[in-house]
Length: 281
Image 1 (tube, rainbow, N blue to C red):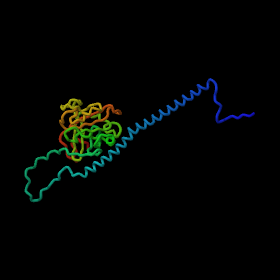
Image 2 (image 1 turned 180 degrees about the horizontal axis):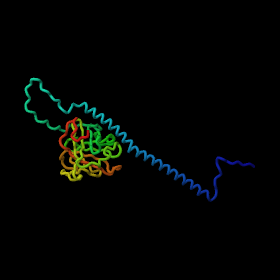
Image 3 (image 1 turned 135 degrees about the vertical axis):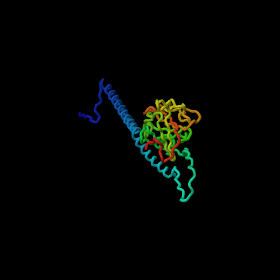
Image 4 (image 1 turned 60 degrees about the vertical axis):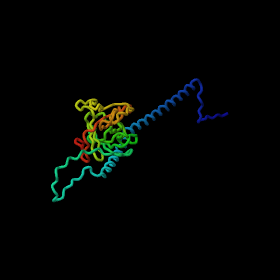
């Protein structure tokens, strides 16, 4: 009688140690599978963080470059804000008394479609070269391009509240350092016809944001549901002047709250292309 050994199917283990050994193999396989799954999730999460913090900044910078070029081309096609000087013909009678100075430029009427660029925001406190093109709307698709204007709030220079939102982290991080703003800081808004200078509310001498005579604080940290910060007069009430409000997430890397900066129009607008005094070159 002859016998053969099946090399592809070795004999099964028998005896009291066989069952614990099989159970141990199963547990090791389970732990290995869970570990590999967690490592995969960790890598995906890491890639997502890199995308949110760095890749979206690169994409937003490209969007801002395109918007800046677009808005400058639009403005270049507009007639100049200053009327040309007219020289009287030779032999004409001497002119009479000098006319009264022209009134300061009035806020222009701005009609921007959703997603359209219509203004440029300059904030010297955040850097001499800080400028961001503002688009109409605050949905994610608009905020991915840069700061967005809250629909149905005032336009630059108008009575009411010109309210603008922007990301703090990712998507270009336009309001990353908004917490550095101090009372009296200038926020300059450039439009097709004018420059508007707003000043952060509060006491520049003491740095106290809560002592403005208007009763509107220069800085607030609020819950996202507190939408009265973008009311015509921040905090509520009837319109009482021309305000600007900037909102962003707070604290950094979180959307639990909102950091809000309030400013008020300082003086009359200046006609483009001349920038107002103190504006960064």
